[in-house]
Length: 83
Image (cartoon, rainbow, N blue to C red; front, side, top):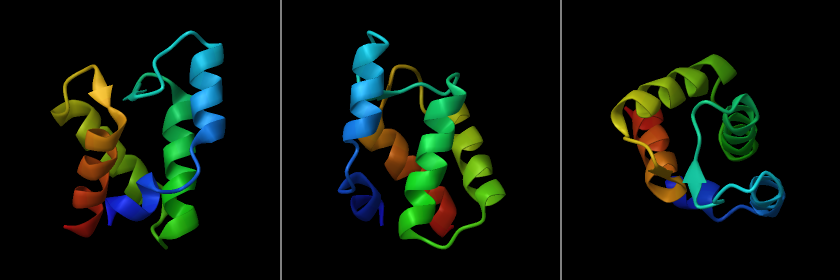
């Protein structure tokens, strides 16, 4: 499931991270725009409610230690959505 989301075009996300002098390979839970970006990215592929995705993100922010590799983080979120 996570492959569909990870294989989407993330170039606008990467560009913004680079502009902010941050590593695009990592997900920052404290950045609201990153959370919203991931919610929109997942909703573009799957039919989950926004709040359901936001809760999965919250849980993964608690369970995946920083720095959070994007791939590992998205996999965590998608596992939570499946379960």
